Amino acid sequence: YPSGPPRYPMYGAVPQHLLQHAQIYASQPSQPIPPQHNPSIAPFGTPSPPEVRQPRKSSREEGPFQQQWDRLDRVAAKSNADLRQGTSKLITNYIERPTHAIAMRSMQTLCQGAALCDVISSKFDAVITSIDDDKFSGKEDDLKVYDDTQQRPSGSSPSSARRKGTAEDQVYEALGGNKGSNHFAKVWLYSNSRLPPHLPPFKVYLPTYPLLCLAATYSERVYDPPVPKSKEVENHIPANWRSGTKAMVLKSIPVDDMNTVVFAIRGSQTFMDWAVNYNSAPASPEGFLDDPSNFCHAGFLYVARKMVKPVADRLRVLIQENPSRKHCSLLITGHSAGGAVAALLYAHMMSKSVDSELSYLTDFFKRVHCVTFGAPPISRWPLRKSENPRHKKSLFYSFINEGDPVPRADKSFFRSLIKLYTTPAPSISALGSTVASMSALNLTQPLSLSPPKSRLRLRRPSKSTLPPAKPPVAPPAVEWPVPTCELSPAGRLIVLRPRPGGRETDVEAVTVEEGMLRKVMYGDPLKHQMRVYKERVDCVATKAVTMGG
Image (cartoon, rainbow, N blue to C red):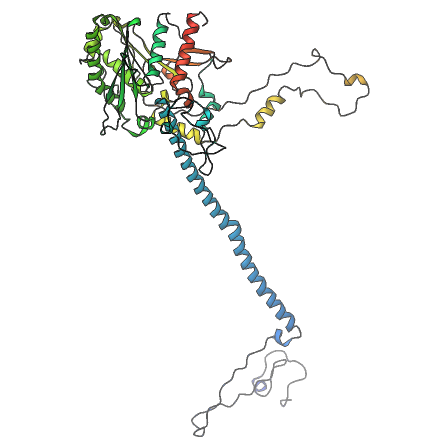
């Protein structure tokens, strides 16, 4: 029995002597221990045998499915490479390229928007300046803004229809194209581009209308050179490079048949210079007006100060030529920037606490009037007529065409106006019109889906049987936000406009308060033309004299 293992397994503790001569059941036989190679006993010169470790072959390589495994490895490697390449293409096509395109498009849009602002601002400046120089043709085509890649229509000259000037009078370059856009007409699409329809009418005594027509006539004629052998005299006020103001022109005309001496003023500076570029910050009128805290436009104030001596010298000459002119009226008038300077000169002559050679001549005239047309705002608080009973019958009117942007041309207003020109025009959605049309239908009655059984059901119902239809609901109007302006226009504000619901030639004159004018957004340069002012003043005066209005 000790010579071999038992036939059956033994349970319990195994004796020690059995472990020495036998192995446990189900255990593998022990491996023989290979002999250790001792290099010290090896013969000299005999290299030691290298130990070569054979790689162990896996069961995949030894099995019958080796080719299938290799094929799966190649497919997996290819799928991994394709997945990486596809992910890279996906990121490039759907993330990187669209992001780059959006960035480039945004940059292009910003550049185009900035370029459009510059083009429209330059165009607006050119139009207003040409109107102030009486070189504008009055055509709506000359208000269009063209692309650089296009060409201007042939035969379109800004000054050909209005003036007999040459090519030097043209204020527009060939920005040109056959498909220009009139960005300035966009302002009429907003609901706050017009005043309310019902406003107090402008009513004065009949002898006042000839004086208003006289002011409009000479405000337009101030742009013409003096007629030879006439009593018209021009005085030029030099420029000042420190304050950035250019020369002004003062024209004096004695109208003896109307017992009036007319002083018409016009400016030779561009609109952008007055409104934005040159010294438009308010300055104190100390020593020039009664209220030194009522700050005024620095450029206009400088020109008005420089005009005190020339105007006083010219008035003394006129009085010396004809002493009977002491009983005449003095009318100071002007258009655009000239109107702003005229209002300051009038306020200076009416001042009580200011003494100058011009204010001294105020008492030499029966009355002193001031009538301006399209004058820009000039002071922090509106300049008013003097409360002195002696000047009770003096006129201080500021006429404004509805839509003329110059009477609202404060710096903040001008920035907002340029933004309006470059913004897409407001459009009424189709949903609003659809709802308005559907609101007139009666949808409360149940509809029958069955075909009619008799011809009586095909008859048109009478008006008595139909329920009353609701009036259509108009979509809400779009308003442009009007910025707060720092300066105010001078005098009593008179707005000239076509009568609501009437023709363009059916003009009415209404009075407005300065607070109401601050709520409207005017931006049509065509309404700034002095020719339009004169036509409307003549129309209102004619209707008043003929009892037509």
